[in-house]
Amino acid sequence: MIGQVWRRWVSLGFVLAAVFGTARAATPPAALQPADGAVDVNVGVLRWTEVPGCVYDLRFGTEAAPPLYRTGLAVALEKPVVLELDRTYRWQVVARRDTVVVATSPVFSFATLPIALQPSLAYGHFVDARDDKVYWTVTVGGREWMAQNLDHELPGASWYYDDDPRQKVYGRLYAGRALAGDQAAICPAGWRIPTRAEWVELLDALGGAKAAGPACKEAGPAHWRRSDAARLNTGGLTVLPGGSRDRKPSFGNLGKYANFWTATPDPEIPGGYYQVDFGFMRDAVNVSTGDGDWSYAIRCVRD
Image (cartoon, rainbow, N blue to C red; front, side, top):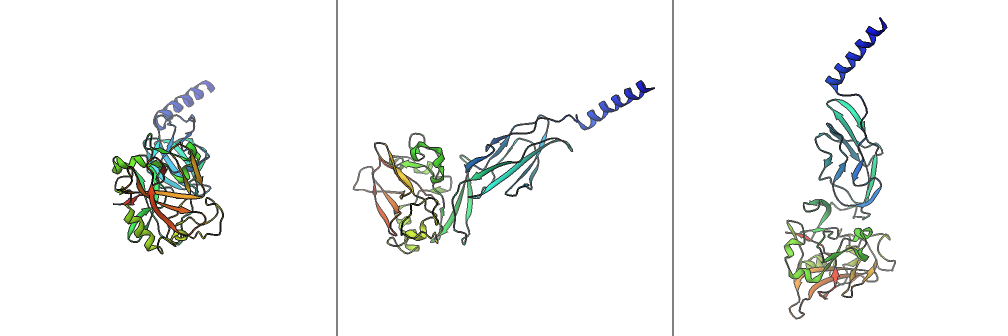
C-alpha cells in the first residue's frame, strides 16, 4: 500500500515537472555590467548571467527595494538605461519559466558619476549609440550643450587624466591634432564640436568672457581647488577642471583649469586651434590658441 502511494506521488511529480518546469532552484543571475558595487558608472547598460530557458523580470531604481522596471525580457540584457548623475542605483533580476520563478538574484548596486548639476534648471539627456554612454545636456543662449565632458575613445588621440580610468568624471583629453581629421567622428551623431564663435556666444549669454566663469563652473568643493573665485553654475554648464596633457607627454592642472577645444583653427598658427579655458582663481574665461600637440577636453553642441 505504501509503495503504491509512493509510486503515485513520484508519477505526479514527473507530470508537474513536465507541465510547470522543474522546481529545482537554478543558479541566481550574477551582475556582469556594471559590476556589483561599481562607481563612476556612465554606460546605460545592465547585463547579467543567463539562466537557461528563462525570461527575466528586472527591478531597477534608487530605492532600497527597487521597483519593477521591465518584465518578460528574453535576453540577459537591458539597454539603453538612462542614468542620472550623482545617484546610487539598485537592481535585481528574477528568472522564471512561464510563471514559475526559478532564481532570484541578490540586489546589486552601483554609483554614477559624482557630478552636481544645477538643481534649479531643466536638463535633457541622450545616449551615445556608439558606446551607450549617457550624457546630460543644458540649453544656453538658444543652443543645447553637453553638460558633461565628452568621454568617447579615439585610439591614440584621447586619454583619461594620468591614463587613469578612475578620472572618467572629467571625460577624456583629446589631442589637438585630432581636430584636423574627421571632426564629425569625434562627437556623437547629431552633435559637433562648437566653433570659437559659438563659445563666445555662450559666454556672452552668461555675462561675457570677463565674468562668465562663476555661471559656468560646477558649484561646490568636490572638484575645483579652493579659492575666493565664485562657482555658482547658474548657467548649468557644470564645467569641471579636468586639466590637460602636454606634448612631453605629461598631465597637469587637474582641479585647477578646464580647457576646451573649439572647432576653429587659428590661420596664423599651423596645427593650432582656438581653445577656451577656465581657471580656479579667476572669473574671466580666456579664449586663445591651443597647441595641436596638447590635449584638452571637449564639449559638444547639438547640430
